[in-house]
Length: 180
Image (cartoon, rainbow, N blue to C red; front, side, top):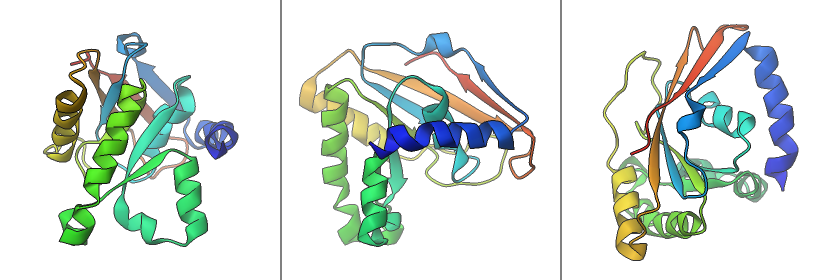
């Protein structure tokens, strides 16, 4: 519910902050099937919310697990805006074991036809190039195919680029690639 309340507010904030937001090749995004949006990650916060705020589709988001060490009210808010925790090896082996639950939850969402955004580079860095892709997204997808054998699934590569992400009234470009 919180997702639907804050989405128009955040959309307005993005429209004020950026001079222009360009979306290209949106027609490439398939409808009526589970999707992984494989998004690059040049900024820490804006990348995932761009798609959510300007798309009619409801998104779920993979979010680093250490954020879930926050107070219960923050955890509730994160769940209410469709955030799903993922744990990195740098957060300790016991936390990484929790990823099994995360993967299972993602599989259930996909089976129901959901779209999940995954920041496939795994880390934020202000660079104008694609960095190596983390292994987790592939494991997540392979687990889904193993469990459901569903061939109605698409990975949509999404490139996000900024003229200057730290500059007020700059430009942002979002380009959808051909589904895989």
